[in-house]
Structures are given as C-alpha cells and as structure tokens.
Image 1 (cartoon, rainbow, N blue to C red):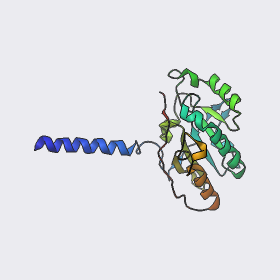
Image 2: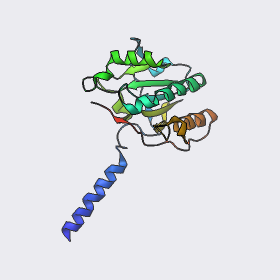
Image 3: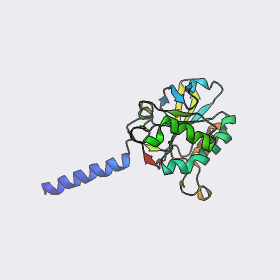
Image 4: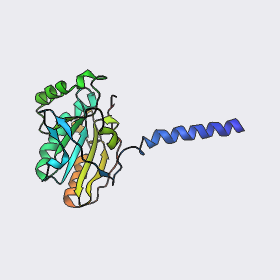
Length: 202
C-alpha cells in the first residue's frame, strides 16, 4: 500500500513537471521586461530604447541552424514588413552558444541575414545573458512587448502560428492576432502558446 502511494506521488510529480514547462522561469505575460544591449550583425550595439517611435516589439529568439527556425524565416520577415510601420518591429536574437553550434557563430549570422535579406536587427546573445531573463527555451520562441507608462510589458509568449511545416496550412496566426489586438486596443484572446522548435544550445 505504501509503495502504491509512493508510485502515485512520483507519477503525479512527473506529470506536473511535464505540463508546467518551466513556467516559473523567465518572464510571464503581464511582467515588465528589462532592456538589453546586444551586438547586431552590422557591428553596432542595439537596445530596445533605441526605437523611440516604436509602440512595442515582436521579439524572436531564433538561429541559423534549427530547421524549425529556418522554416519560419520568411514568416518572420513578413511580420516585420507588416508591423514595423505600425510600431511593432521585429527584433531577432540568436541565443545559441557557437561553441556548441558553430553554424550559429556571429560570422554565420551575418552570412545568413544577407542570404535571406533580413529586414530587422539580428542580435547575438553573447554570453547567453538575455534569453534566460525571458525564459526562452526554443528556436523560434516569440515574445510580444508593448510600451506602457511602467515600461515594456510582456503581452504574448509562444509560437508564431499553428503550423511550422506548411505556411499555407496555417489556421491560427498567434503573433499576428496578438499584435492586431494591441493595435486595435482589444484584449489578446490567446496570450500563451507552446513554442515549437529546437532547444537552445548552451
């Protein structure tokens, strides 16, 4: 009987940990995010405070080597083209350790951005200091921030949409829906989703 109770307790803990998905780490929706200063592929340091006219930001933790991240590159470019002029530019951050993943080196970032024609900053999280603050675990992992009187408030965390494999088969565009809601002054209906992608390499 005691063994049976112990097994149930262990199973319960494992089940709970599987579904919590590190939700206690990093920013949650409603939190205020700190600014940062990271090197862009043009060699200049970039901070969110540099974008004085922005209403907020679409932040993506992404990289060169993850097939999920690569599959989403065109959609991320499209998000920047659609929303930058409306006050929500894309800021891309590569969180991977290039010693663990040489294809995500700073030089490789410059090459990839040129190949794809990135229209947004592509920043290197040197020393991997920024992504843990956000609580990012995947590439890509999306965060939408809105400027408020109290600072940059996190409004959405998760996936870009509901179909990483086929852009034409997407039914729900989580990031677009969230930004559209902010622009219209409406509540965001879905503020948290599960990010689908490769684990960040440390």
